[in-house]
Image (cartoon, rainbow, N blue to C red; front, side, top):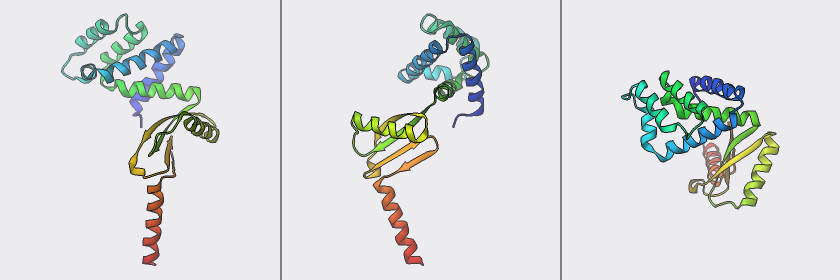
Length: 181
């Protein structure tokens, strides 16, 4: 769940980028920044460090990202550092991406199976989910041996659990309830 503070910043920054007509550039910059932070632990630590003063962070942001990210994005990062919110950057970026998906009518889903699914099956799952939810659903896929077999799909707050482990749990409950009656 995205904290209220992050949603407020995300909403204001998203609207500002739209007004400036640079939303696509801003979103691309944020994806790049997110990737950089995943690849560089030092960069992530830099944004989270309470030891580095805001002035030093702002100077470093300008030196590091000038020419790499758009002027708008660099100003946003400097603004966040100035307000002491740079340590919330990842959650703010996630909130901005969520706002954009919402504006496009896209939901994210997560599919867990015990076996790898081919492209045709993945497309079929996403087509059915999109039809059911009346939004475009984009899924990430993972293999999860703990479910024993079947499939578990999570989209938003909804879980479709067709796993063998869930079925076994339901049978176990029925047997336990049947013996206590």
